[in-house]
Amino acid sequence: DALPIFLRLRKSSFCRNGRDYTVTKIPAVCTCTLEDYMCDFGYFRPENQSECVEEKELTGHALEFCLSGEEELLKTNGYRKIPGDKCTGGTTKDREVVDLKKKCTSDLLQPKAMVVPFNSVGVIIAVVAVVLLAVVAAIFIVK
Image (cartoon, rainbow, N blue to C red):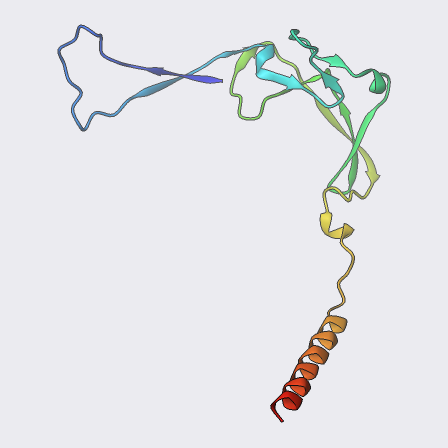
């Protein structure tokens, strides 16, 4: 995380900022700690603990997933950096994604593939039939 540092006047100062004063922030990059990482897939943080622990159901199993039509293997030590976190140095927890060179399909990444094709011809015929019946009914009511 980049913590902003604000410059401000002392309480005892008699100076005034005025209308055109703009606050200047000096970003400071922090050193990475475990708080800059979240638990990766298949891991969780037990209550009141800072270390990520592997879920018992996934112990010894490879984490394979389908991404953009390619099957990949996730090699992780249980942590991934929180998106947008800009810390440097300190604690580093790397993860690696290995392309297994296998083709795959994923319905989760392509939700359109799950939708049943829509036949509009039947709907058009039904709408025309309802309109014709309404016109015929209106002619009989007027006469």
